[in-house]
Length: 183
Picture 1 (cartoon, one colour):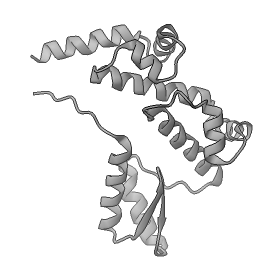
Picture 2 (cartoon, helix red, strand yellow; picture 1 turned 120 degrees about the horizontal axis):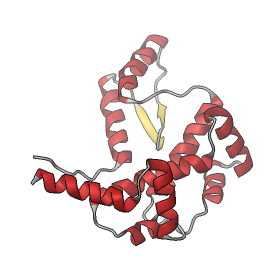
Picture 3 (cartoon, one colour; picture 1 turned 90 degrees about the horizontal axis):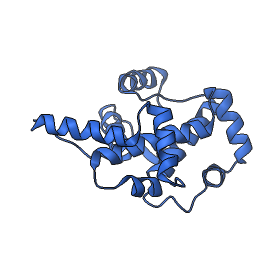
């Protein structure tokens, strides 16, 4: 039996961190997505043990200031892309206001650290969100394009194909075929 599961990545990450920090008796407060404040001072051994526990699951403690800013940029982009009503936000304005830096500065730091642009990261996140929405199968491609702030389905299709190698319609057919084969 195969189940299709809809999930909230923010909730999953928060629960995972809470579970692991509780196991290490670490008192903390969540400040935002990907940012926590630890109430107690951890010694080097405890911090290293925590890093080792989180690392295999894709979590990393970011210590370099530019890397911290890049992670905040990525988190803000993910927040923007996954907002139910993000049509009122221009990504450059959203990032500048959320992170209290000029967009030019954010763009330069992001490119310096990742060797890629903020725009490319936004496209990748939008395509991942589009794939999730296609799999859930509750919206048309027109609705998905609108939700993700694309000017048209053609624009979504072009970026989808450039990123994945197939069109959203072909992706829909693949998902539909897989579901039929499971019956």
